[in-house]
Amino acid sequence: MSWRGPMEVDAPRERSGRLRGRTVRVSALRPDDRDAMWGLFRDYYADVRRTDFERDLAEKDHVIVLRDTGDGSIRGFSTLKVYDRREGGRRFRAIFSGDTIVDVEYWGQSALHWTFLAFLVRQKARSLGTPLYWFLISKGYKTYLLLARNFPEHWPRHDRPTSPRAQAILDLLSRDRYGDAYDAEQGVLHFPEPHGRLRACVAPIAEEQLVHPDVRFFAERNPGHVHGDELCCLGKVDSAFVVRGAWRSAMRPLKRWVRRPLPVEGEVPALTASQEVKL
Image 1 (tube, rainbow, N blue to C red):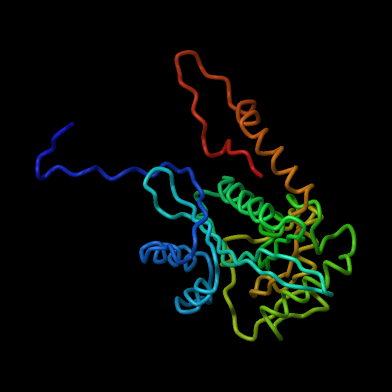
Image 2 (image 1 turned 90 degrees about the horizontal axis):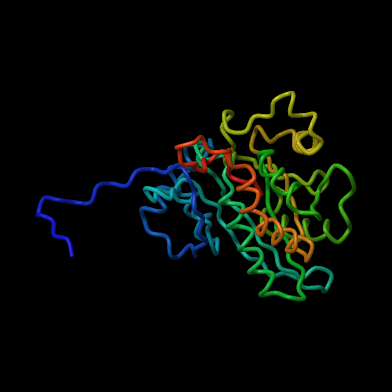
């Protein structure tokens, strides 16, 4: 056992630049965790207040906390709520994603995606026989792309109309949560007072990005996103989604290995954040 003098303390750990995700209950968050989350949220969203942030957080069930693997600081988070509802006499479960933000220095990493995927798979395992959906609202195209690229069945979408069943579930959840702010015809939330809008520097849509059909669809369907309007969306967590996620998880180490650059003789290769495999 080593001994240290009375003035010796552990040196502060350095930031690694890599994220690790963990899902915890909101009730388990410490006061300093909440302070860090609020600081991030305030930095990336305009027209937000701490009281509203805390009230929204309190009514959620879980939160995905993203910490730097080095110094342990919180660099991102996503709040979650589980809904058990019935539509047309049939039961379904929906996971609602609330406030979500990742520090720009950590963009391109997939810790949030994999942690959320694991949460969805656990929820699906607990509700076998009950349809499970991801319910989200999006004021930024990056969130919509996360849905479009990872859920084989998702709505709304550019290539086919929303099914009557999916539309009924979307309408039910959106009206239940947001009342008159929900415009069912457009599938968009309009708030009389700003409920938080992305700062212009966070996720602007450049002209060249509009050639992507999903980005163009988001911009056309939610033209008021720059003012804080939210597009209501739904993704189905079915067997195809679970199998696809399991396959990607199994292939992840191989893809990392294939993408790893060949080492220079005498050097030790290192995996950098830019090599993180996206979900």
